Each structure stands twice: as structure tokens, then as C-alpha cells.
Length: 256
Image 1 (cartoon, helix red, strand yellow):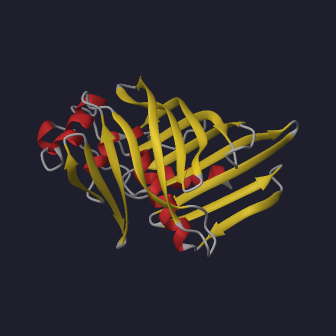
Image 2 (spheres, rainbow, N blue to C red):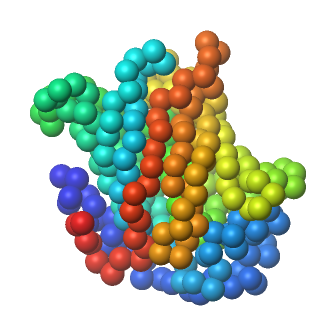
């Protein structure tokens, strides 16, 4: 199922549209965002239309629970915003949890199974999940910076080192604040995101701290990040993630 969805993401209509990013393309955005795009190496390159990446890291389900190692693979369509993320978590010896997050325009889906067999989460057609997956896409443009120039994202300057971005798809919008250091690296993304997808889920502060940077295929991006819920009872750092490989502008689906 996931491999079929990977292929659908890469083949979505509109993926062939590409332009060379010039300095003149960036003059309608906040100065600090322009600085980030230049620092990332996105200028004088073809804009990114699709992405394939691999990740590893650790995650946990509660603040006091054990860390579980995972590996993941993700495909993005940047021209027609969508993604599919597939993860395999080593929960216990000989027991794994597999999951899939999916965004197709403004629609999100989440599926998690134990041993690839028994579903424990299966959410779709849920406005809170839709909002959460759109927020995730917005936060993850840090890995493909030229997306910041697409018309579906608008920007508002906050101060010299931060700006607010709003992602709008089919009249549905989510926003988040991007914070940068003086050199132009993106060091923090923060927003309010639904903590879960059930009827009682509430918006909670959610942040991604980028702690290390690396150059892949000419782009300087965050390669190590820490994801934390800022809850009333205390911070819940639930995910630490590392990009281990990333490819841009695939001509066709490539399973690597």
C-alpha cells in the first residue's frame, strides 16, 4: 500500500514544473527568510519539485517511557503539496510497530499497526488530523527550502530573526513561526498543533529544534532535530530525528 502511495506522490500532475531560483524570486518575502534561502544554497538552482528522504532516530509515547529506535522513508510532492511517510519502530525485541502518515492536499491520514497486522490507529476524514498533517508539511519545508517561495505559502515578518508562515490549501490554513540565527540557519519552528486526533484533542504548543546541519546535494539543511510538545505538565520531547539521505527532483518513482 505504501509503495503504491509513494508512486502516486511522485507522479502527481504538476511535478514537472521547474524554474531557476534567482535573487529576484526572493524579494517578496521577509529579509530573514530570504537570507535562509540563500544560506541553504537554493538560489541559482532549479526549484525543488519532489523529495525522497530516509531518516533514523528514536521516539517514545510518554515522557517517562523508553526510547524506541526507528527508521523511516518519506516522499514529498512540493508542487502539489502531499507526502507519504512510512516508519518502522523497534518497540520490543521481535515486536515492531509500523506506521504511515499521509497528506494529499489538505487531507491527512494516519495508520499505525503492530507487527504490520493489527491496527491501533486508523484516522482519516478528520479535520484535526488534516490540520496536523498540513502543519507537519509546513514545518518540513526546512528540508526543501525553495518551497518557501511557492504561492501556497505566505509570510509575515515578526522581527529580525523570525517570520510567520501560513500554508493555505483549498481555503484551509495553518501557520507556524520560523526562527533563525544571525547566520541564516533555521533553528526553530513553533506552532499550535492538535495533540491527537480524537474529539477531545486540544491545540498544544509544538516545536522543532534543529540542532545540527549538513549539506546534501548542494543544499544545507537541518539533519538532526528534536521535536517537543510544550505541555502544561512539562515538556514532552517525544521524537529525535536524523536525515541520513535525501534526493531531489526525481524523474520517476525510485525505491532505494
